[in-house]
Length: 287
Image 1 (cartoon, rainbow, N blue to C red):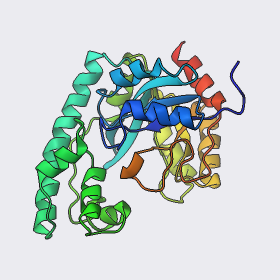
Image 2 (cartoon, rainbow, N blue to C red; image 1 turned 45 degrees about the horizontal axis):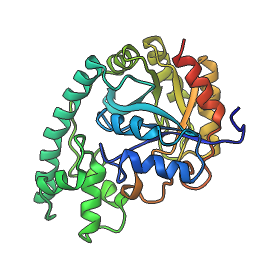
Image 3 (tube, rainbow, N blue to C red; image 1 turned 135 degrees about the horizontal axis):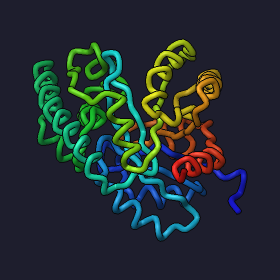
Image 4 (cartoon, rainbow, N blue to C red; image 1 turned 90 degrees about the vertical axis):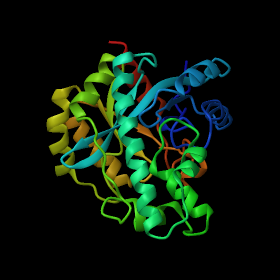
């Protein structure tokens, strides 16, 4: 029987997208800190899951959850839907992800051009080489510019260059939340709205507005435990999730050295996601 004090982390990234550690290394790290369940949720790619699941056989004390983080467009902005317990070989899901990656790659070329026009020494080949995986996100651009001494922290790069409204930001074509949720569920997974609140806001009105639309599409859960959430934010998400009779999830959004200050399982220091969260979501996935 699982220790009730055991902790989990159901949101992390590997070198298959924009994390700095391989799927195998993530499992080794999780084992070293005593996590009981982890999910690999790379951005818009399933390519890290075969290694993740194979390597997990070496760690019987860890439940390895195959996952995905899908970028979608809602009301003119990008939000993210996690798929947990997905089939890594599901072709319809992969077809949707392929289109997302194609649009992401086109966007990345535009970002490089804008950064060059701003005077930064960066090339698309550098970005691809550093990423290594098939889904290349903006944290790679930030890491390169920090390494070259243009900025001190990755967040500084986002604030000055890469976030929405900044000079090098480029939008991209994304699927709807409805399509992403449908594909995740068709692949045998459960759909989770990731990091639903921004910065320190605990906006229940926004949560309710989005959930009114997405729960009828089949959304199963919302991320209530997250690295940057304050206790007030976590409480708001839990209470609104209860209003809509959906489950809660949680994860650090660990990217390794590509996101300084966020630790696996601990977030920014105080994150503690109970094992019961995994049990509830596992039970839901088996219905």
